[in-house]
Length: 323
Image (cartoon, rainbow, N blue to C red; front, side):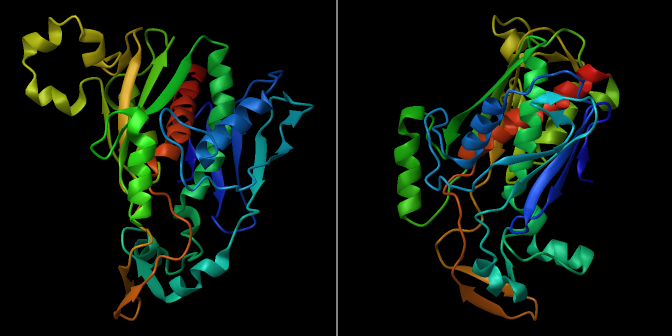
């Protein structure tokens, strides 16, 4: 599926090296003035053009992320009708991926797409490319503005790169990995404040379930936890429920419903599957071949994922608050 949400929904479309990517937002109230600067700041963060809590993406692409509003917005104000927008792929280089017509990259969706659909866009991964997340950031930025008017604030940051947890050392750590032609994983933490008590539903519509669903849809996300998360296995019940840090342990959610305290969750992102080092590519004919990863790849995708995590959290919360 390419649509997220019910009352407030977002549909994503477009391929990595096609003419454009874009989206359709439905459920945005009429008369809302959109802060275009906020949207472009979020896009710059996703593209790696600005420093993100201790790290800047060495890739720092100039993808030319200019948003073209096709419907639903007039003179910067929403009309209450579906909002459609596109971002033209000005920096597309499909020729970089010609060799992939007959090869599969390890750690990518090349083979699974081919086997499932019988056809695939080999140009940078098509729909499976992280380029698609730029559309999410635009939609999420609109949602963030609606939430801000309700007193809800969403802030994500990079808290770990590889084994390094000191933000002051992130840049140097990533630079070393990049010089070696390799890649590294990272952890992004998100804190949501101002969320009222009662957001979320019991059983199958729990708040953390929807957040996990949204986060795990982000390219390269390998895990989600909230509150004490996986560290809970090492805690005793008395340490959890009689602790002064009970809020941090619960993550602001009880029984799938927000409890009025800050919601805290974390996402772990894997190392980029492709990098400058030689890797094995599996040809469709079954032969194994050595090849260089031609194209453009981040040494640490978690840096750019910060903006995407914020966007996806905003889309989930605005949908809940629209019901």
